[in-house]
Length: 220
Ligand SMILES: [Zn+2]
Image (cartoon, rainbow, N blue to C red; front, side, top):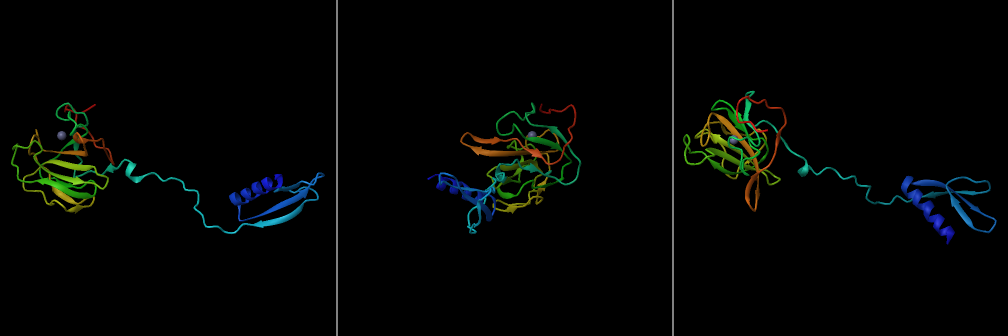
């Protein structure tokens, strides 16, 4: 029994360390057989050759890509432009849908590009000026993880993508504008997730710093 136990230990050691291992077998005064990986005088050496057994290697969990925070490339060409209202901005980033939005001031007609790949699920392109929809003209892109990037206040007639179209990072979407509830030319970019309670904005970060303009309704 003891021998079997010791042998098991020996085999376990072999399995954990190498394919072949030299073990030493000795018998004590009471006739008990000992197997050890250390030589003792009088011990009989023998080599255990472990057969190569296909078995899963120890799996080190990789970080789940979907759970890693995606850092958004700037969704425009040109600049640099500055943020005029950030997350929790008291001017209009106060409700669940827009709490974590960022407003970036930029001249009308600035190319707006996709900050993340996905499928266009909704657009508005016909609104002039303030219009009836506070969002103005917009493009909504659903990302692979189910979140949606929304680009608001776009220039009338400039939306160049259609619903169902797949866009890659950097794909042109539209030109920036000043439509809807907008107090000046800017892009309102927000990332949202659909919940039972409706769309809620979720925090996001750009992959590079964006300066802020002072004296505007910046969040804290
Ligand atoms: Zn905004």
